[in-house]
Image (tube, rainbow, N blue to C red):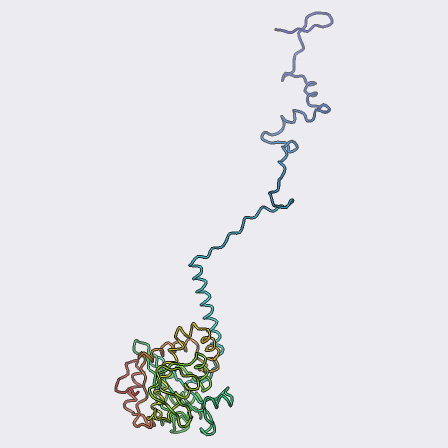
Length: 403
């Protein structure tokens, strides 16, 4: 159907042509101008890039609701409940091992810096060269350092002036630790042995200690035996007794009654029986008794026997795991022991481990072969065999072992 346009003349006319796009410019302008109360023009929507939205007309977010039990206005996200840490067996064992290692390290450091030191070993012209194995010089002195008058009376140490004054050695031993599978050796040097003392001529070997201390004694032993001394350890009267009392005494087997007519110490026969510090000191010093007819030879044999029992008891679980024994032992050791300035705790530990076999026969124990019961003169031929075996880390011949 065609619509017509009638003008004033009533004639039929065609409607004016429409502009391209189907709408007049005026109509477009009218559409572009927003009407009051109508808001934005549809044209704005046509001119906005596709895929974008006007923030003014974005839907409002839903109202926030706080979770139950949480204070209003708390902007932090809710935290997860903490997980309980589960300790596995491996973690527990690891923690125990770590604690044990730290404990041992603490003990090591404590002993390393607490044990007394002395310059006992030094190089000199003509000193024997180091050979196979390691040699310790072990000295038991009659030092009364740290003892009160009551302690001296209780331990029956005797009078220093009556003994000639100065410090002397009741015990002189060489402990040889081999580098191979041969047995360690604990060798006693009788205190009355006549030897050459550098700078002092010939005298009893224990006189070297009173004349020049540990340094002269070590040099004298090296000259008499031909052995190179690598380490030095010394213990006095008071320190010896304290160590024994710290571990609650040392169990020994005493074959017959021992009554020392000089010190007045008596030890009854019995097996086993526990020797306290006083009795132990009397046992290792005793030579004026019916139980020690060979005098010094019997005394040095008893000293080796006691050292074996003492080391075995100290290294036993009953001592190391018992705090009532272990900690008193730990506190008494630094005051009782003196080592060379070049020695360390790990050297001492190696000695203790090697000497554990004395009681079980794992260590060769002997005295330097002598020519008589007075133990003043050494048998030169047998002594040379003994010292050569130690130098070369070979088995000590049975023919030169004296017990």
